[in-house]
Image (cartoon, rainbow, N blue to C red):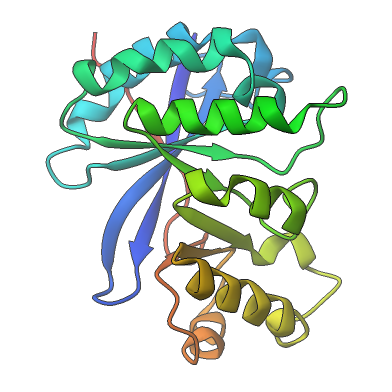
Amino acid sequence: MLCFWGQPRFSRKPFSAFGYELFLREGEPGKWRVPNDFSQFSAQQIIDLLVKTVPQLAPKIPNISINADVDQFIDPAFYQPFSQVKQLLPMINLAIELTEHPAAHWIATTKLVTAAASFNQFGMRVILDDVGSGDNQLERVQLLNPYVHEYKFAIQNFRPVSTLEDILPQLAYWHSLAQKNHKALTIEGIESVTDIALLSRYKIDMLQGYFLGRPEYLPAQH
């Protein structure tokens, strides 16, 4: 059995709930677990679960995002079914977050571009998750920039090795690049009031982290 857990995302100014990032879990109520292999789930399974889950969120928080590893992202069998989402769920703004996880095999850049362009065509925003980590480095960012609406920078990827002060130069770099390229920027991994205070010098668009809201179980309607 599949379900979504949702973590709230917050706009910085004004500070308010902006949307949810959804995470797939499997099991049963009270015994949900992280799947070992996300590729086992088809796009249609994910879409069917979205249809059963997100309408309850949409009246207050219509901005929803889901994750896809690069092997899923570039697979036409995965992205083509999302052409129906705008018709099925017209009340939400759905985004696909391309994770930083390495691909199982070499991937042609043309496949990345085709997939990103297709998601845009289907009315979906593309988010580059965890920029500066894994495979979501500058080369991929520059390649996909025409189709990307948002960068996410994950503080937690550098902890506990580095303090937030140590990370600030990298954050400043991605903040500058987001402004230059006219992209929204979300900072993930907010863990304390101190984090928020240190980030106050930057005009960050959105914030996300355990301090602001932990993932919560979202029951599906039957």
